Amino acid sequence: MLAVALATVIGLASAAACAELRGKVYLLVNPQAPRGEWQRRPLPGAFVAVSWTVIVPAPGHAVDSCRYSELARSDDKGEYVMEGPNFLTAAVADTAYYAYSPGFDPVSFPYPGSPISPKDITLTFSTRTPEERLSHIGGFTDPGCTPETLHDPRSLRVPYLRALLDEAKTLNVDTERGRRDVAYIEAVLRRATGQERPQRPRVVVVPGASEAANPQPAANPAEPR
Image (cartoon, rainbow, N blue to C red; front, side, top):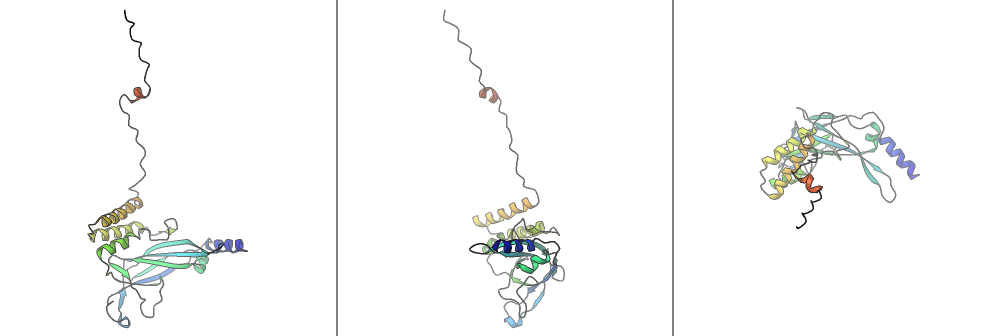
């Protein structure tokens, strides 16, 4: 029975066709005001990553299986659209989202009357220290749940990583941890752009090495007279 349920869930999550997702990103412009007086405006240029995760039954405990994730960016009206996974995955999966725009963080509480969902996202000005901000954005170089399940039909991953790196450098965190975080983002960007590839081993021939490796028998010394 468990095997049947497992096969059903995986089969449903692997079906074809797409369930489009549309959403909007807002900027909360007055976070210091009482919550009932918050004012929002559309935020263009924000990167949004959404993942769809299926809970797979398993002996002892259920297992999370990320079936699909996608990266999009908000337009001049703050709106974005994703192709989305197949309809059955969208029906049975739980969604999680991450939104990034330089200098902004998600609000701690949703806008009054708005659901907490990728369809209605609100960011506001980050209050983190430069060190905290750098550590935070350095942990989001993979915007989807995994690189293998990330769909990027609009080729946004490289611009996203460049935006992360640009902000990381402007934070000017001159500590060992800070330099390491910046170097890590740079390395991920190089790999994403194909600038960093495995190097073939180089064979260096040292003069005389072949003779040393295969010494010839020494000539017999002359017999004493």
